[in-house]
Length: 151
Image 1: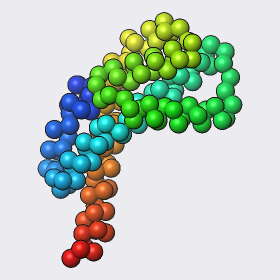
Image 2 (image 1 turned 180 degrees about the vertical axis):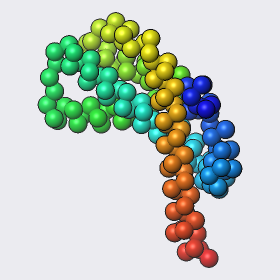
Image 3 (image 1 turned 45 degrees about the horizontal axis):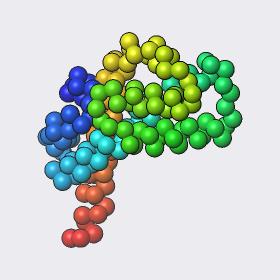
Image 4 (image 1 turned 180 degrees about the horizontal axis):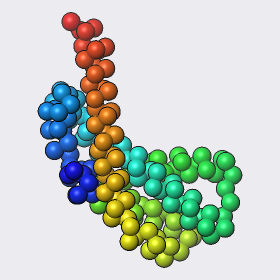
């Protein structure tokens, strides 16, 4: 809920770590490492938003893409999302920068702005949820596979 209303995976980080430890039974060390890295790197909802927005806007302006260009945009959107700040509206401005680099007028982003607050809430929640999923999987693997080898 914190990520939803703050629209920031970084702002929700302390509560997310606490919930992972208490509700998901993840060790403190694993929760700290996975959620700290995940709040910076794991921005899968942002990558999806960048890709869908760029392709939609370009297509609506008459651009056509080859399969190679679409794969390139997937790669670029993923890299851009990794470098995105976990702050409210961060992905919106990153997408605006992508569209500017494509010489697309920015007034098109004005069509998205009225609904972006809701999208940003959903993006942040999805990012935090996926971090929690990764955290549980990694914690389970460490407890089942790695720790028994050292005993």
